Length: 327
Image (cartoon, rainbow, N blue to C red; front, side):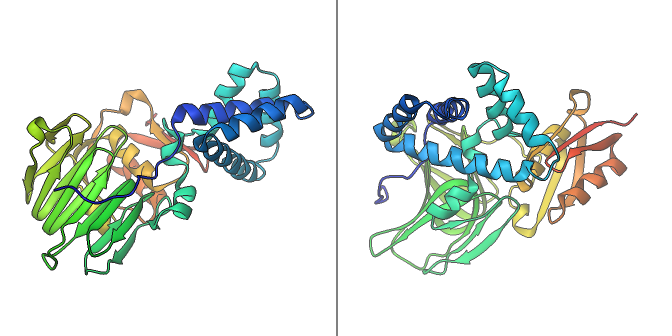
């Protein structure tokens, strides 16, 4: 059985976003070129995704300009640098600024847009808990967005981005579905965590049972996952997840709980709860740490690391933080 669903709402392809950035740069450096403006209009009108990407680039440019205005001389320096470069180099510069701390601009820095278009969403660093009409408890982690479609035919939660913790009961004859771009998950009286990454969806079952319905699973069969089990679901496979170095559901309590986790991986996780870049030098990336860390103040969390590991925290700006080996 498969869920009834409308067409999935998704963002434009990253290549389209790059095209929008390229158009923005060309127009920025050729403001009086009427023909170029007309060509851009034709490109925007050619496809819905073109206009969507254009609007997002414009919105992010405005936000970036507002942030740079707080740094004396920063906006002028960026402007002069962009004008002094060729179009390809300028595209890389703008992309680098827009993509600070992220390999996929569209999947990380557009939380605001998805807050406008999704039924439920959270900003970076925000967590939210709601109770759905049937009594199902839905918790959203940082930077997450979902669409909810409950009616007499179905109970469907579409995870647009991010991570959710679902607690459901067997109170309805209508199945509860959670859909991601990698598969469909059927909740069966229990509690389970679903996290959608760029290349896979991660499922962790806390209690009860969950059935994974993947269109690409061998023979079209479903995989039943029991309490304490974890699975990775990709476009072409459903496999047990490797041993965990982090408690997948601790975020619901405002915590990160680690067990021998690489420092680089830990910082990537903490980075989900704050804006900007957070990373470390290569020589300390493989340091391991175990412990319980609170998420409400990530700066305080980073300060704790200096007392447990031979590292120091460097703030270049509020949005650019790196860890280096202690001198």
